[in-house]
Image (tube, rainbow, N blue to C red; front, side, top):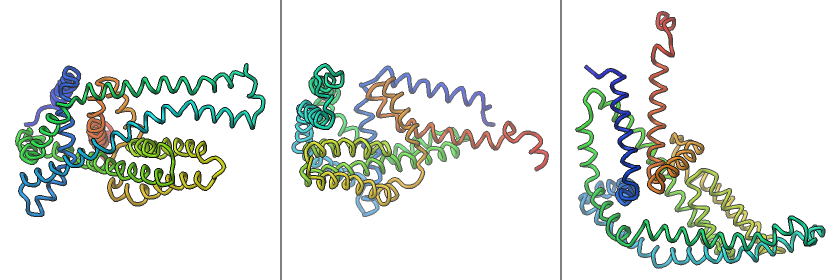
Length: 355
């Protein structure tokens, strides 16, 4: 006989409370393990495909590990230093950009030439303020990065955790399945499958879209000669994780820089605009349908709320678990609505009698 609904809610509520309490208490201690689990989850389909090609699980995991190590070396030696350099250069260039904006506005609006104008004073201080604050932000980010992702975590803990979790992923899933309460195992498996599909469609699919678009934007903007093209491409690609935000922010940033750099050469400005239009076309018609699929159940507003709430409550660790928890809550909410619409509270006695 199954437990009453009230008892089930109580026990599952206690389990959820313990999960969030552990998350809050351990904080950054569990961060490398969450990162390792995320990497293993992301790469599990690759390992499964290699197994179908004839490799053992250990061999498939070894191949993935070697390729991931080579990719990490390339990123560490080439991409990351270039990105940091361009970010610092972009911050240093802000005063000159603000000055060019001031000259542009002064030529077309002579009243701005008045030194006592509030707008003129704002433009005079804009560049210096952003430069100083931007440098502080960059230094804080780099300091936090070095504090959170120290050499031990980057070089040892995360790869080791990811390797062993990827190696034992199928066995762990089978073990967890064996521990499910028998009366509720079919429902839990169904919900877990829906959560996995949501995460696979969004995290794996959208992450691949971000990587492809970020690379495209960076390379294309560099080919047209836009200053800080790598930085802009990285920002646009990373923000593509939130639908429409990446193209909007990256496009405005790129076109704004192009207007200052290529003023008088309108064809280059149009070229920058065309790059983002092409990127949006490819994403909407090719990448997202193929890699992300249809409705994955994560509305952009719900995703923003989850990232904001979990980031505020649990810091960087909260950001890591925000998307999985948001996906799980979305699936559970839809299941609860389905149960409600099939019950007496929604249908009422009159509809039951008629049927």
